[in-house]
Length: 138
Figure 1: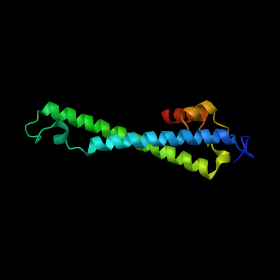
Figure 2 (figure 1 turned 180 degrees about the horizontal axis):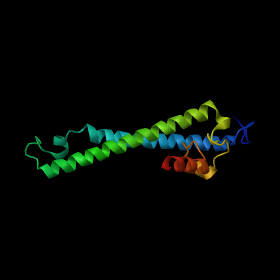
Figure 3 (figure 1 turned 60 degrees about the vertical axis):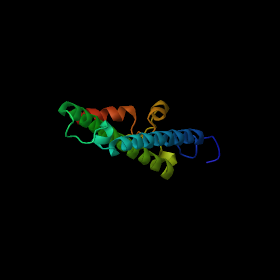
Figure 4 (figure 1 turned 90 degrees about the vertical axis):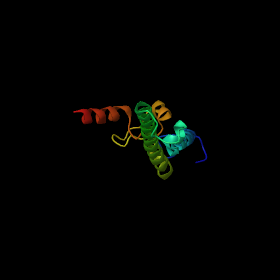
């Protein structure tokens, strides 16, 4: 796509598609860096993290705190993994079919630029997202 005009049948111009691609790549890089940090935290044993030679002398409350912090890091790493999954799916959609990228998978309308700029991996417009959330809550 060499020009800055809308491509035939495309929801977005070439410049806008390139912007969304860069946003996705930046988000992916940030998520991978964050997962690397969580991985480093989780690969350290409790003994090494606390500076103790064994957990035997460790007070139960201290051990519980350390365990809780490790569980929180694991949950955050899991969330980053889910985010990475959504980002990769969005990049696949963008590369496979740039003319339909940014089109709501539910209603077929173009997703608002502001929404895609903020959360570039979303597959639904705000209205369809709210309908989907309401159907789950019912």
